[in-house]
Image (cartoon, rainbow, N blue to C red; front, side):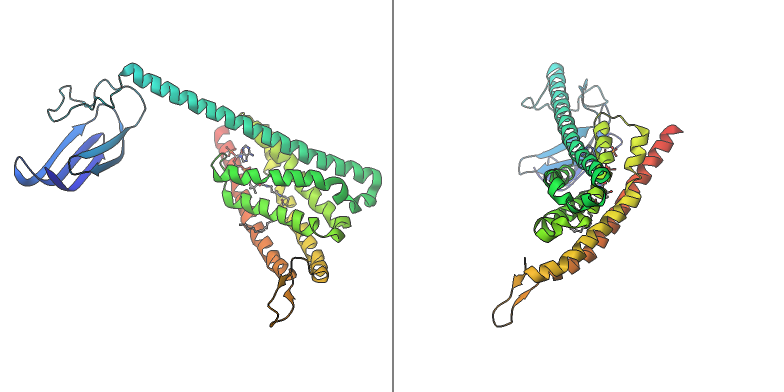
Amino acid sequence: FFLQSIDVQVHENVLQFRAQGHGAKGQNEYGFSLEFLLPVKPEVSHKSTQRQVNITVGKQQRGWWERLTVRERKPVFLAPDFDRWLDESDAEMEIREKVRLNNCFVSLKTGFLFVYNLVQFLGFSWIFVNMTVRLFIFGQDSLYDTFHTISDMMFFCQILACVEVLNAAFGFVRTAVIPTLIQVVGRNFILFIIFGSLEEMHSRPVVFFVFYLWSAVEIFRYPFYMLGCFDTEWKTLTWLRYTVWIPLYPLGVLAEAVAVIQSIPLFDETKLFSIPLPKAIGTSVSFSYVLHVYLVLMFLGLFINFRHLYKQRKRRFRTKKRKAN
Ligand SMILES: CCCCCCCCCCCCC/C=C/C(=O)SCCNC(=O)CCNC(=O)[C@H](O)C(C)(C)COP(=O)(O)OP(=O)(O)OC[C@H]1O[C@@H](n2cnc3c(N)ncnc32)[C@H](O)[C@@H]1OP(=O)(O)O
């Protein structure tokens, strides 16, 4: 029996099979239909070999079926595959095991996210409180030694923030990968390349503004996520999470742009990260050219993330309003 032009479809729980083949009626069109006992998924897959056609149809809802078809009498051509047969208790056990494993995974994921957010919250709170207290005690002088007092904790928090890109990429959290990547790469570029590699930048007041603006946003974002891990929310915190970025994001990017502009003559002077050219052409290309391109990318990044956060804000407050109605 060799089948060609196989057509298998499921409409309203009825499977329709049609194919051309050479069988009992010679070369002919053969077919059958089966109406399933309970709802099945409309997507159906099939694979044909020399000997047989394997059709896979998924149940709409997991569970034990009394029998396969609506008709009590089994069609004569239908026979169970006992190698893959599960009786009621086997099927229930399998489902229970799957549910147990799934619950286990969800608890582990929630625990991991909660600890991650807690660590970030503590880190950024330490930064924010430390900077505020130092500002009150030392006034303007505190602007000049922010890097020396805060950078280690900022390095720690920002390296850890790379986890956020992985969380988004592996679907651990319902968030877009690109905005998260822009945020993490953008900040780490400023922190490690602009501030970290140029000693002269360490004592510039711009470090204070960048660190203060970053941490001012995060002290609301991470506790918001911590509550979210347990499906809880505190309305004021939700409002703050989805509102403080409106002035702080552009200000943060502006402070970063000032830092980049201030670093350009320093990179030109020190020739740090400059790209050497072949002797025949001349000296080297200064890293400041990369920084000019980066300045353009920054505003592109700001636009992408601002739009993303605006959409998140609208989605959040629209859902809440609908729930309230
Ligand atoms: C390709 C690389 C190119 C690089 C180019 C470089 C150019 C760089 C230019 C840009 C430079 C920007 C640098 C940054 C500057 C600043 O930070 S300035 C200071 C102000 N900053 C901010 O205000 C930004 C703060 N950051 C964020 O808001 C986020 O990082 C975000 C990615 C921009 C947006 O967050 P997102 O997660 O998408 O939105 P949410 O609504 O908060 O979350 C969506 C859902 O996901 C859940 N969730 C997310 N994270 C977690 C988590 N850690 N734990 C638990 N749950 C999480 C969240 O609860 C939401 O779920 P639902 O409630 O069910 O919807």
